[in-house]
Each structure stands twice: as C-alpha cells, then as structure tokens.
Length: 258
Image (cartoon, rainbow, N blue to C red):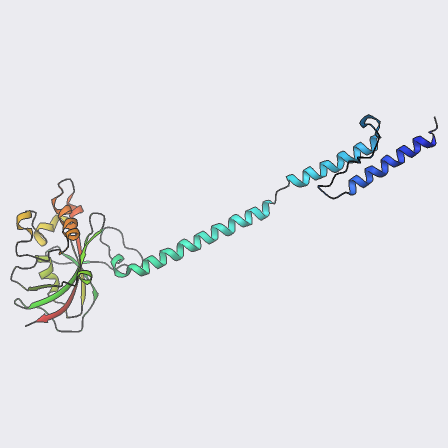
C-alpha cells in the first residue's frame, strides 16, 4: 500500500536524525528530546545504524596499544640494567684494593693472587715502596694498618687511618704478632702489603686464644671498643670453624726509627 505524505515525512525525519546521530562526536548525546516518537514506532533503519555506531565505539575503547606498552616496559628494563651496572661499577671503584684479593673466593677480573710464605702466611704487595729496605731484627718500624675479619662477615676491626694511632714495634722482639713481624720484613718504606692469616694458623701467626694473654705486650691491639669486640668475637666464639677465624690486614710501612 502507498504511504501517506505524513508517514513519508515521519520516516524521512527519523532517518535524518539517525544519520546525525552517527556523525555526532563521541560522548555527545544522540537522543532527540523533542522527538514524540515512541521507541516501538522508530524505524528499524535508525535502530540498526545506532547499534552499529555503538559497536564501533565499544571496540575502539577496548583496543589497547600493546606495541606502546611493550616499548615502555622495554625502555624501563633497559634503564634499570644501565643504572645497576653503573652503580656496581662505582662501588667497585670506591672499594679499591679492599676487594682485590682471592681471600675466600675464586679470582675475578682485576683480582690479584696471594703468595704463600713458608709459614703459611698469605701475602701480596699492593704497593711497592721506594724508601729504605727493612730486613734485619732490631729495626724499629712505624706501621699503619687496617684489619678485617675476612673469614666471618668481613667486618672491619679497625684502621689507624681513622684512629691516627700507628703501631710501633721492633722487629724480632716479640712485641708484634708473628704475621706482622714477617710481613714487614722485605718491605720498603712507603709500601703497602696485604696479609691474610688463615684461620687454622691464627694462633700460630696471630693472636693467642687465651684472652688473658692475647694483648699482653703483643700488638697490634685495637684501640677502640668496637674494634676489640669484633676481633675478640671471632677468636672466642667456640661455635665458629677455623676458616671463620681468618684475619686480613693491610700493612703500610710508614717509617723507620733509629
């Protein structure tokens, strides 16, 4: 049957409104408040067009940019690796020779291997001095030292660079632990020698296990409470094994006294 002019007008108006709705920007209302048509009387073409527009908007909202997200994660990971590498390099540089030994681990790049003397003392020269050579007993020497419990948590015992109290002793008179007496022999003034007393040889080359005799006229004795406590702990703790009692010292021959 032919449509009346009024019906044709209603259809054309509805189609025009549906087209305008499809062209409307995202987020704007497509509803026509002045429309007097009921939902049931709206033409099918308008409803279908509106549904198509809604599907397109939902799909657009749900699409995530995986490429952008991956790129951001890759950039963040690269930045973290670069930061960690730079931090480790700075730490290694700051530690200097305090990390350059094969004390309790395999050698790494830049490490120097200890030599072992006949007594079992491990040593290496960090710096060769240019001053007077010290060899004979009866020579009075002034040394600066830094000590560490290398076999147990590598705690610092003490450093005379911080206390400003160098250790003064005479070679061969028994006022220094055997490791110090042996270490200084053959050094030149200005030199720095690193020594390590293996835990199983600690009492032979280092300090007495008898606390009453430990510092009885024998040094070097830590001058601070914390330094003495750190050293006494590894020597007195009966639960530790021999390797835990290993001690490491950096010894600098500062001068010779006559």
